Length: 163
Image (cartoon, rainbow, N blue to C red; front, side, top):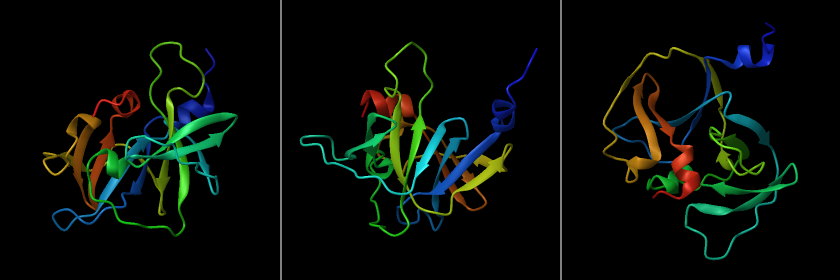
């Protein structure tokens, strides 16, 4: 049986990047995604506003002939966001695809700011109550970590608009 080397190399690795929010309980907040969820990082892409969209949808941007929503995870989770405009990138992430859907239908773009770290699991962290997140149904988990809090977004619920 032949094993896909790229898939094998990505197993057990995660990407962590800082949330653009004030500190919570004197700790920085970070978002965590598996390496397999991340598909691309764009240095520069035009984001077009979408009238009447939810406040957490910043607009849409083109990626590989698809128009993807650009989502603010901070606003989506009900966190007060900081306006950080320097060195931003757009990261294309995907939710697990359980059924056949149109290509691009299970993807969103997120604004991220460096540093973006790649870590290997396990990470020394412990689950905590996420009482400071206003939309807890849009998170899978929140962990206390040596460098702050790690928030794992529930992309399926975000894509379905379950808030």
